Structures are given as structure tokens and as C-alpha cells.
Image (cartoon, rainbow, N blue to C red; front, side, top):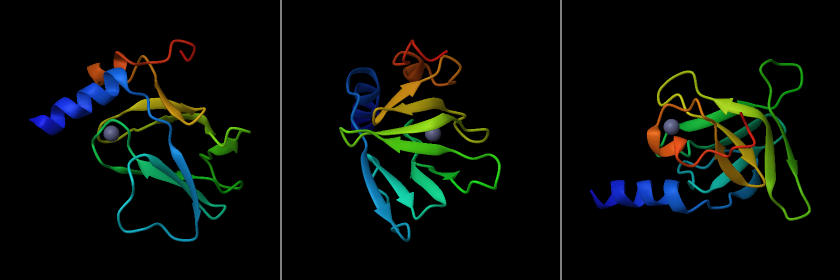
Length: 120
Ligand SMILES: [Zn+2]
């Protein structure tokens, strides 16, 4: 029950900035506030909705769909395009300036409360 409360609190009031780690292989246990750049071929992280599923985004240029990332002067990451899970929690969000910005069509009501209005 306490974990659920903390999860809801984080979604509603805390927008934590993701750390970035460039690695060769994914660790067995992923930190839920870190985005892992696996060489030049994948972007991986724990789903921010709290479902604990690991999201792997393809970064290989010749394979579709493909996501790209940029890291700004402040060492914060942007990922393009948005991430829309088609299985499980069906979360839909952007990673912008190292933070999660929920889309309006994300199914979880907690997420909807924190969506970033400039992404529609
Ligand atoms: Zn999820």
C-alpha cells in the first residue's frame, strides 16, 4: 500500500530527471531513473508508469521503427519520437529534457494528470 502511495505521489508531484548511462551490456537490474544507451543500437529503461517492464528502443539507423536521442548542454536527454507501448500498460510519453511527459492518450489516469500540455 505504501509503495502504491509513493508511486502515485511521484507521478503527481515529482518529475525526476533521468540519469544517462552509456554501456556495452545491460545490467541485470536496471535503475528506474536511468536511461541506458546500449552502444549505438538500443535505448533501454524501466517503464516510467511503474509497471516495471523494461522498454528497449531500437536505435539502429537501418531498422524501423527507430528512436534517436540527443543530449543537451545540461546533460539531459531527449528521445524522438514518443514512446507508445502497444502491449502491457500501453503507456504513451515523450522523454524531453530528461523528464517524462505523458501524452493525453496514455491509459493510466495518474499519468493523465501529469501530461505535458505542449505534446498532443
Ligand atoms: Zn508501464
